[in-house]
Amino acid sequence: MSYQIAQINIARMVAPLDSPVMADFVANLDQINALAEAAPGFVWRLKGEGNDATSLRPYEDDRIIVNMSVWQSIDALFQYTYYTAHTDFFRRRAEWFEKLATPAVTLWWVAAGHEPTPAEGRERLEYLAAHGPTPHAFTFKQHFSPEEAAAYARKAVS
Image (cartoon, rainbow, N blue to C red; front, top):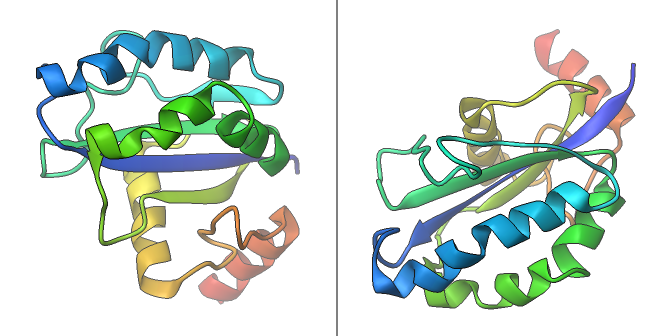
C-alpha cells in the first residue's frame, strides 16, 4: 500500500474573519493556497465555500478555523511550511490568532488517494493532545513511518 502524509492545523482568530484585524490574512489566502498547490509534493487541500476552508467550522467555537492538506511526504510538507513565502505569514500568526492551550497541528499517514475529513483531523488532534506524539498522530519534531503507523493501528484493534 502507498501512503501520503495528512495534516490538520487549527487556529482561533483574534477577531471575526470579516473584521479589519483579519483583512491582511484574508487578502493573502488565495496567494498562499496557490503557493501550496504549486509546491512539489502537494496532493490535496480542504476547501469549503470558495477557494479556501475558512467557511468550515468543525468546532463549536466559531472563531476556530481549520486547514487540512495531504502531501506526498513529510519533507515536501516541511519544505512548503518553512521554506517558501508561506513562512512569512506563519511568522505573523500572532497578529491574527491566539495561542491555543492544546496542539494546533498534527500529522498522520493516510492511504494514497484518501481525503481526510475535518472530523478525522479533529480526532487526530484530540489524540495528540491526550497521548502525545504516537504513530497515530504526530508532529514534525517527532514523526513516525507509515509502517510504524500501520503496526500501531493493528496493535490498537487487537
